Amino acid sequence: MPTIIFTRQLERFLVAPCATVEGATLCEALVAVFASHPTLRGYVLDDQGALRRHVAVYINGRPARDRARLGDPVGPDDEIHVFQALSGG
Amino acid sequence: MSERLHIGTRKGLFEIARREGAWEIVDAHFLGDPVSAVLAEADGSVTAALDLGHFGSKLWRRDSEGVWREIAVPAFPPKPEDDADDPHPWSLVKIWALEPGGIAGRLWAGTMPGGLFRSDDGGASWALNEPLWLMPERRQWMGVAGGEEPGINSILVDPRNPADIRIGVSIAGLWASTDAGASWRIINHGMYNEYMPPEQSGDPIAQDIHRLAHCPAHPDIVWCQHHNGVFRSADGGASWHELTAIRPAKFGFAVAAHPRDPDTAWFVPATKDERRIPVDAKIVVARTRDGGRSFTALTRGLPQRHAYDLVWRHALAVDESGERLAFGSTSGGLWISEDGGDSWTMLDARLPPIAVVRFAPVPR
Image (cartoon, rainbow over all chains, first blue to last red; front, side, top):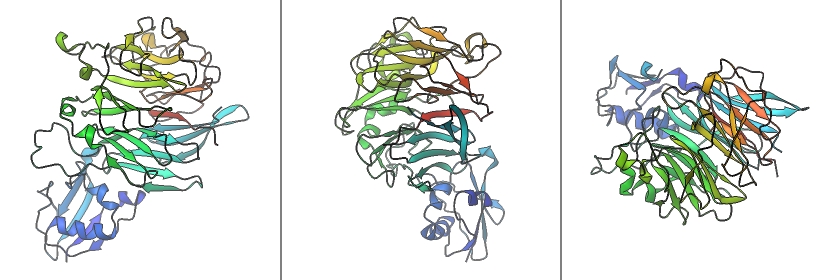
C-alpha cells in the first residue's frame, strides 16, 4: 500500500499524519486519507477537487502529472509527498 | 463606545483594547498568516478569514468562551461540464467581506471570484447564493488588480429588513436583492468610470466600487468610494451623485458612514491611481458633515511628511457612537480617533500591512 507524507507546515493548522493507505491512483490514496481527516481535503485540493495551485505532490520523487483529476497511478511501495510549492511565496 | 478593535494584517490578527484611556495590543492570533476579513459580533464571538497562500482560504471562529476553532469554509459546487466558457473559477480565492445577516445565526460572506455565501447556523455550514452566481450577467464581472478575479467587497443588510441586501463588487457595480437573495438586479445609476471606452463610462456593471457604507439609522443613505470618485445615494444605492468637493483627491479605497447622522462620512484620499500614495506624502482623512457638499481635511496627529501609507477598503472603521474611528495602513500604521476624527493617536507598534480594521460591538 502506498504511503503519503504531508509537509509538516500543515501541523500549524491541523493533524496531517503520515499514512499508509489503499489506492491505485493518487486520487484514491488521497480520498482514503481524507476519509479519516476530512478537513485536510480543503488544504490540499480546491473546490473542484484539483490540487491547489501552490501545493506540490511528488510520487517517488516525480511531480504528479494529472493535477486536475489526480489520475497518476501509485503502486504498493510508492511514496507520495505533499509539499507547499515555492510558487506560493 | 467600543473598547476593542480587531486588526487583520498580512501576518496575523491583532486585538487592540482601551485600558485606562490608552489603546494597546492585548492579543495576537494566527501570527504569520494573512487575514482577509474579520467579524466581531455582539455575543462576543469573533470570526476570522485566513488567506493561506498555499492551502487556501479558511475560517476560524472564537466563541464567547474564548476558544478558536476552524469552521466550515464556503465552497463552490462542482462546475458543470458545459460551463467551460465561464471566465471565472468555481473555486474560492479569498473571503473579502463578512457581515451579520440581521437574523440569529445568519452570516453573509462575499468572496473572490464573486460568489456570495450564506450561513444560517453561525458558520457551521455555508451555501452559495446560486441566483447571483448563475445569472448570465455574472460572466461580465471583471477582475481587479491584486486579485485578478471579481470580488464582493461590501455587503449592506438593511437594519429594517434583513431580506433587503445590497452588495458592492469590484468590478461589477451594485446589486440589490429584496428577497434575501432569491433574485438580484443591478441598480446603480449615476456613476462613471475613466478606465473603459467612453460609451461604457456610465454602464452600471462597469463600475469599480471600492467600498460601500450606509448610515445604519438611515439605510437609504449610502456612500461609495469608487475608483474614479466619491459618490452618495439617498435612495438605497439606485441613483448616485458625485461629491466633487472632496479634497485632497477623489481616489481612495475606504469609506465609513456615521451610525446616526446621514450627512457625516469619512474617507482616506490618495493620489490616483497609478501611484497610490498619499497626496504630497501627507496622510489625511476627509470628513463631510453636510452630505458631501463640503469636506474638511483632518490632519491633527497624522503624519504630514514622508508618509507613503495607503489605506485599503476594509481598513477604516467607525464605532457605534460615531466618535471613535480607526484606520490602518499598508505600512502597518494604526491611528485611532476619539473625537470623530478631529485628532488622531498612532498606536505604538509596527504592525504588518493592514487589510482590515473593525470595532467589536459593545457587549450586550
